[in-house]
Length: 217
Image 1: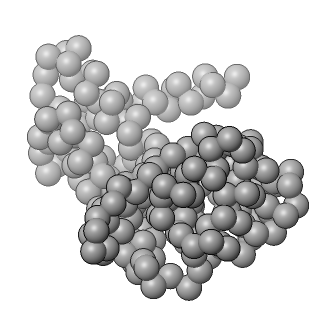
Image 2 (image 1 turned 135 degrees about the vertical axis):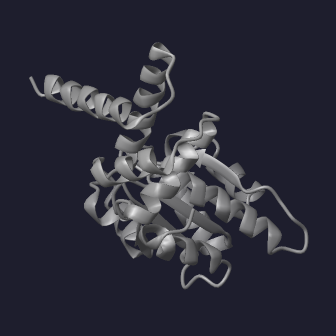
């Protein structure tokens, strides 16, 4: 899905292999589409090579000093998802140096820009601070519309334009909320054995708001 909030990130991914640096960081809130863009990158990288190869996607916490060398040797392009200071700092530092000095590309994804994280290893922090970053913002109406339609389609549910418009105009502007809202709407609809209507959407929103208030106390 391409909209204003992720257009820059999509352009950056599709610029490969003409990146200004060997690495790139995409960051944004949970559920904003980072994993989707990671898969777009993987498909794009494979399509741009004479001999297509699978692009490995792995969580930052899966990297350790035992597998860093093998990961680099077997993967000219790599996606490291959920970059976090809680991952093995020494292993990440080693992997970073391998790709920078011996060749290869890394796409990192995270919820926060590396400069705002606090890695225990200063050398790792300084290297990650050099990597170009692209932020994915909270969704605008265009993105929310596409997201809501997709979430319902994934559940094989068709909703009316009236319901869709009400959701987009009244929901909290976040990806995570959209996912929870669609799940709650579906649960209420199934429990009542009724088609999805604006009143059902209102009830789902009230339920989510109540749950949030209860979590605060």
